[in-house]
Length: 133
Image (cartoon, rainbow, N blue to C red; front, side, top):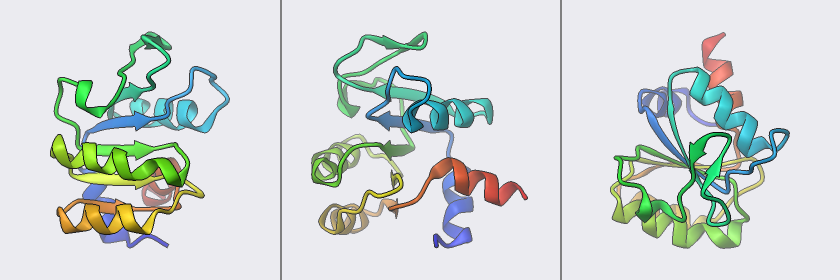
């Protein structure tokens, strides 16, 4: 379980790049992001296959976003996480969030060495809901 102090620190941040954002509304990347947007977070979809998703501009990668990103929320397989973390370091993100089932210890270690807060194998929406109770 993720430390509540870490969660509270993350949830003070307000911009989230969602890696692997799906245009399908029933996919976790879509409905989790919609929930976070409803709670006041700015969402930046990242999916190189689309120019827009659900009326939102979609970006090819983190480095193509011309806004400050606080949280990088990853909905990709673990083997794809390291280059995402490397880009997160380049753009000076503050936190990496690997959704349910995603664990990459090497990428996590590199993120932490670069002072990023890291959560893995957890759902940002579920944890946000749990802190509100």
